[in-house]
Image 1: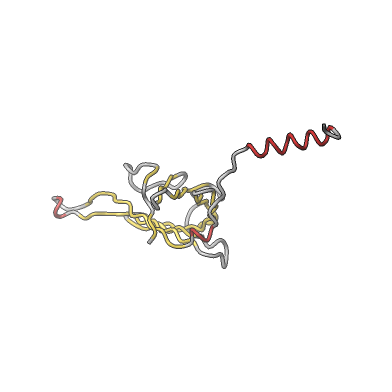
Image 2: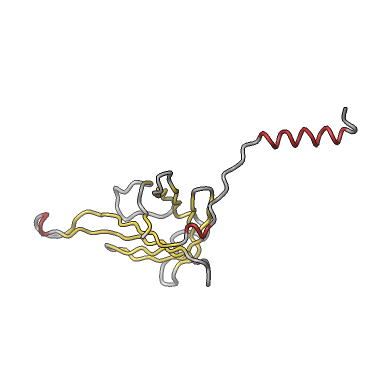
Length: 153
């Protein structure tokens, strides 16, 4: 039936490989290029009454573009008592995009080691985005670690 044991093993390996599920391929990085914004509401501050108080936010901006220098990936965080900026790397994995720390501005103190996953963006079936925070700490104490935070903008 089989000429050699080697032929039998090869046929068995081929049949086994054909039955394994195929992993979803990653969406190429250029499909993620653009700007993403998350405005985190932090409540109200100041004033003697709600009418006199001011609503405060922290705005997170992710910019992804072809790399000219460094990586082409930048995160900028601005808002109530917060200003940070760092370069990042963006790694696509299926319908996910993992954003990792690459380099801080020289004036920012070290917050996370290089290569630390900061957050992950996940494309949903309806075309939206879900964010899963990792090392990136939100400004608000009541902000959950995941949700529909970032949007294209």
